[in-house]
Image (cartoon, rainbow, N blue to C red):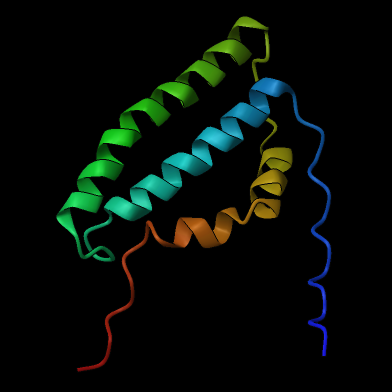
Length: 105
């Protein structure tokens, strides 16, 4: 029996190239911080590698924001950017950054 197809994702809102780079870089940073999170990880080497990669991703986010500023984009359109983050599964990805609830003893 064939597997049912998942429902299609909503379309991404229209973003400038710099906004798209900001969103992509931000999500990569979130993913890396989630891998570094000591309350969720189990290997120091994996956390070390994620921490090393975090530096490059932070620079990419800074560069996207600098480009936006240079182009005169003075405001972040929070509602539009939040919609893009939701479409790209940002809420689930950001959960790895949080401290998990205590498990019952």
